[in-house]
Image (cartoon, rainbow, N blue to C red; front, top):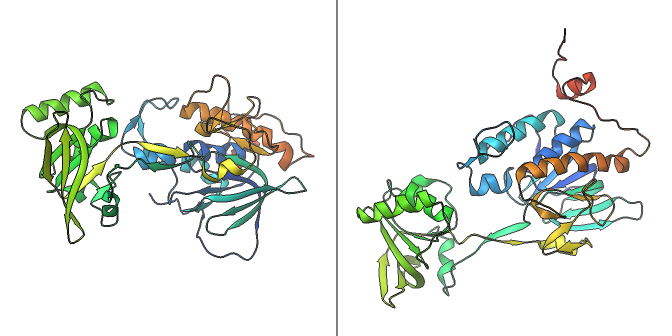
Length: 362
């Protein structure tokens, strides 16, 4: 996805001093992008940092083309469509994006502001910090076969599909029993030379309709389904040639292949967040429900990264949290300013900020 040219995206480079910011948002997923909008309505411009190389977070990384049905007033949209819409909504507030880097250091200063530093050496002094890091940094769960991960380098072993056409005419082995494994089995079967789906149990975690389609294709000999586990492989000249699959019957089958796709899910980790002195419970950051502030004044946490009584990990819940967090942060950013609630429908001031004409009501 290409950033809108009206939104400056920071290029990782050596800087000559820290960037002073009213707000730094850690995470450019849907909730982080909506946090930009809510802060913008209060005349706060934000810097956004994300470890990924493009905005959108998990929806753009994991299911850019899968439908999402629970965004208010949007009956259905894909992860990419949601990201594009949120980027357009945030455009009037001109956030600066610092992508492909994570915050490695966050320390409170004596004056109440925060020193931040990224993995690429970019430094910030921020009045407020918003952690919108989803489940934290996430890494794919990998096959537990010694030496198999060497084929990540040549692309034969992958944990996500960026371009389905890469696999056209190839012999594929897909590992997993969840939605991603079934979805890509069904999507790649028409274009691949052959597809073999391997799952360690007879039961699947995927949608029943997807499982039924897969089984129908297997019965029609359009693909192969094996209940078993990856137990070994054979390579020649650094190229993966075949994998060994041991079934529930104890028989090991040797499957020639071009590519191995592994969909065992993601393993979340807090990473550096765990060292920032925040009150953490079960790898989530505890917040209040008035302004979604953490145990450290001036640091807020919104979206899947936070926890509180009754928490639901939904994008729409994160949008609500971002709105209250923005109002909670204003007292740190504009301590002398009285901020009142205004409505985008009727506020001429907000219309100016958004660059839209004020409607005329009879």
